[in-house]
Length: 268
Image 1: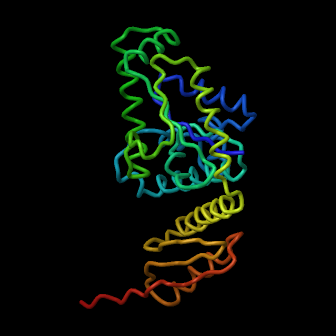
Image 2: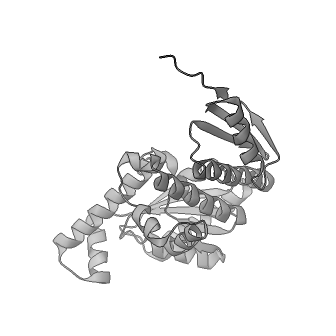
Image 3: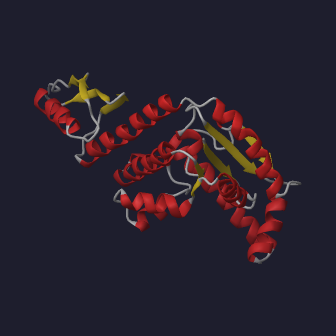
């Protein structure tokens, strides 16, 4: 079985399509509520989740402590969901985080602005000017979120395997289009390799979160088959060894390779 990520414009029927696909395949459905629940289990309060989740933010937010905590927790939730397999993941950069992993189908759902306005009017009511404002803000938030945390263009076609324009298509037709592709994606899946890669990505988030909690910066983390390689720099050999000890205690770490350099004190 496979993993499906769905990126969608507001009013494009993306959520409805995602729900139908997960129902027909009997897959887990991971949307805002499920991801929010996962983030809170990783120590984020609901107000923090709402502050960052799919919002257009200043680029420097990613480097703030709370922004980094959110980013690590969000990645962990998505990697863990993909590791469980048989899941439809809606939004939150799944098309970027899971890019290149066999057995993952990346879908984008779009529709012309006026069609989205019409659909939103049926759902919510309201005047066209206000609905246009809501939709344009939603698009800006999606663009800004992906740009801030992943430094990529939300609309980049290379991020997606299948793009569906629902201008003239019903939910059922769009669902059938996705379902028709799933067997081919399943056939390309290497279960062992995918799970090993996802295990490494999950472990990397755990290690980086520990370092972040200890206010340790300037360290690069790479993980391969449970072996963690620490790069970057440490202020002293003693501090470097402390970093190694901290990482060694993280559950799942098999070994720590120390490739850090020691920063020499600057002369006055």
